[in-house]
Length: 413
Image (cartoon, rainbow, N blue to C red; front, side, top):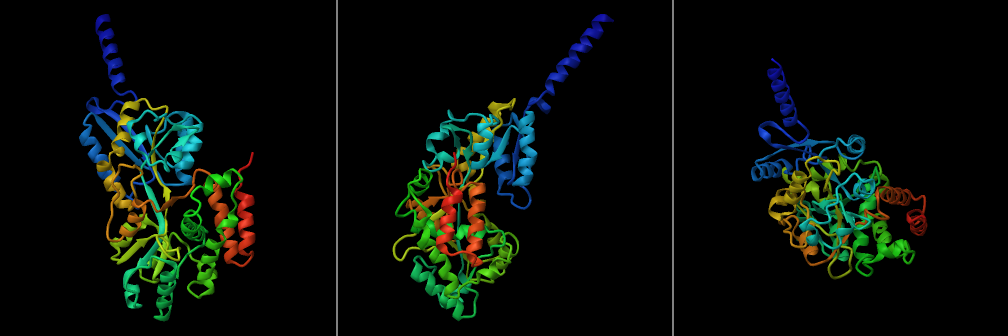
């Protein structure tokens, strides 16, 4: 009887081991992944890529969970990281890399083979204090959309590539009774995005090191004056009414209005193209044509990333998943859904007739990446949004707006 009891106890203990963290049915390793993309609203082909990963790794049971973005994501994941029970792989961005990396929540990925292939301009966004904590999934555009059918109706045969061509196209649309341009700006995002899209050319073509120089106290937002003036000229020439635009939500009404063909031009992110295509829109996504002549820069930001939870008990499986996304062939369904550019120098960026002009500009080296890891952090972006809104309301002029940016965005300490 004693032997039987001891034997049963041993069997129970062994069974308990088989259901420990990281172990699943059939002896498979359970890998838990969190992401704010991959849900019903923005599937981004993540399910397709996850299926491919499991097929390539039959010993791993990948369990993906969609967690809503922004505050809901942080409120869910950060306490779990603190408690040590978050998912093994978590979706991050440049701000989270700085925050969670410095807090010790993220695994050091510096020795991963793919790090040497990350675009040099992207590397600072995935690092904290020189340590790599994330694999970049995409570099994605925020720029100008054109409704090709409305432009044709207005007598415009091709999308503009220079500022004079853009002005002429806006005027023809206006003369034809078509709303030339929509910049919905209730939350401030579109105004700030438009200013950055213009500055990508008028500031960064001449001074690609502006961001670091500003942080070092050697550059000022006074160099953005021509960019701000170009933005304000859109209203003075009758192409847009800023007061009206401040009453339109950029994430709901603004998007649906452009889908419905209510304006010839519109500013938004490239990730919306999938929805525009489903809506049957005949459109183009192009760099903002800011330059008087010659090529204008594409405006980009480093989007979502994958990081490994430093407390994960299945780090080998977690790193396999991250490494899987470093292969351009594996990641291509995501890039195609997002209409994004590969963050790797040896990667392949999807190009369609809609995005060709934008992707060609990036391939030619004509681009600027938003400094979301420095002065254009989440807090810095909010400052710029508020300052542009105040400018649009006539509460301050261009010079005062740029002086405020110098003062409020300057590094402290």
